Length: 311
Image 1 (spheres, helix red, strand yellow):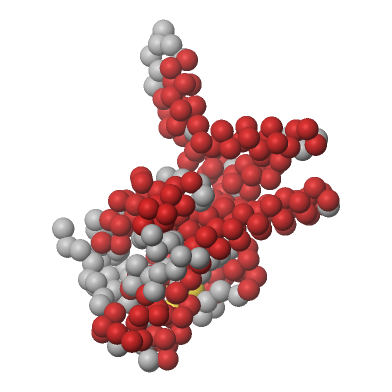
Image 2: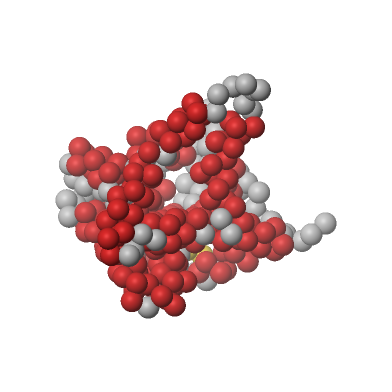
């Protein structure tokens, strides 16, 4: 298998220039995790006080759920905290979990970015698609169909494959075991809110955003990062796309500098908080034209991704 070409920071920076860009922090990762949870709590409190703000809260919370996944992704690269044990603990317990399963998969994606062996290639390979196909995907995301398929699809398939007379209880028990952390979180939040009449917090202010806005912004993230990039692209500066994001897009679509994906693939062990500075340094040094950058924001990326004409 042919691995994707790697870039050495020494090709672009002196050791003195690169040192502050690559420096790992002991406080930025925890601060971003705290920021994500603070926004989630603030958006939830907003709904308690002003129920009509629920649609906005769903978008804010769903985006921060993506933000927590992005910070877990940083932990997969060992970039969330200077101490690797603390890094892994935060990535596993403060961002939603799944770090140990995710890390080998994701590092394989980096090793073979946009090559035939890339496990994420299927996410970008179908593009461009037709506008109708994109609209259908968006509808599936916002109506919870994507969430249900991803979270419960295996359970449904196991139920369908159950032989006549096979006991149902072990299948249900296995599903509960697999979802135990998610369910335990729901039980804790529900128990904490119930005495105050807020028993509905978990389904409305966690599951609803997780089932609607989170799948949509995750899809937009995947499209922006690698859609419409040639398979087996040899240039490591064009195997991933950076999307210039407005303040509103950063609030509701692209948290924690996830839009700087070209820089992330070029220097994958730099923390997400370092990516804007790396981007500015690369532009200042005149490498901007060699990098894959979309200046028009996420709407421009979606136009490219849905530019296929119906047959």
